[in-house]
Amino acid sequence: MSGDATGRRFLTVMVVPDRGQETHTLRVSYRTLRAVGVLGGFAALALTLVAGSWWYLAARSARVTALEARVAELTEERRRIDELAVQMEAIELGYGKIRDLFGPGTAAPSEVWLPPPSTSPRGGGTTSAMPTTLPSSWPLTERGFVTRGLLDEDWGGEEHPGLDIAVPTDSYIRAAGAGTVVDVGDDPIYGRFVVVEHADGYTTLYGHASTHLVSPGQTVRRNEVIALSGSTGRSTAPHLHFEILLNGEAVDPLSLVQQP
Image (cartoon, rainbow, N blue to C red; front, side):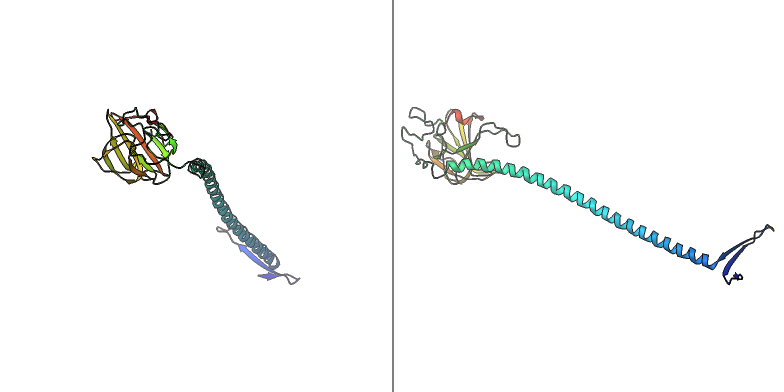
């Protein structure tokens, strides 16, 4: 450390190399050192601010990414909701047709026939000339609403071996022809069901019932009430699943019975 005639103070640094080389002297005033120190402080502060800003921006960027992902999820949920709304509208339209069928303007269901009159406007296509053992009567005392026909493939690609007829819960289900009850039970798909065996290789099945009214081995007449309709088994609404089998093969029920 030294000074000059003006009173300024200096810091002198001497560098003495090995092997007798020339000595180097560096002389810096304290004012310069202070200026360098102040500049260094400003530089350190600037670096700290830059680093802090980087961390802040990185955090904000991560939050923006998370928000964008959430927006994408909400957009997908909204799309699914819109699709569900369209499906529900179609279902509501279908049920509206069913409600119209059973509304105040609909004629009252026919009486339970045991056996039916020889001629009837609600006889489901039967006539007195037809054998009573042939499953040729409409299996309900209600007209109902056919929602699905034979071998339709609009339900998960599966073939459908009969008719689905929408009717209110606890509507009368009746035997389409005279025969013998061969099976009564519960099934994961058909729900509560009744199977009636007729002559000439014919068998009828009545599914999704709420209540059985017959038992195996019981003889039934044509149009005798055998169960009440419901929504048991794999079912989304009250209806009757009606099958006609000839020697174990499904036939179109509408080829033998006529909807009133």
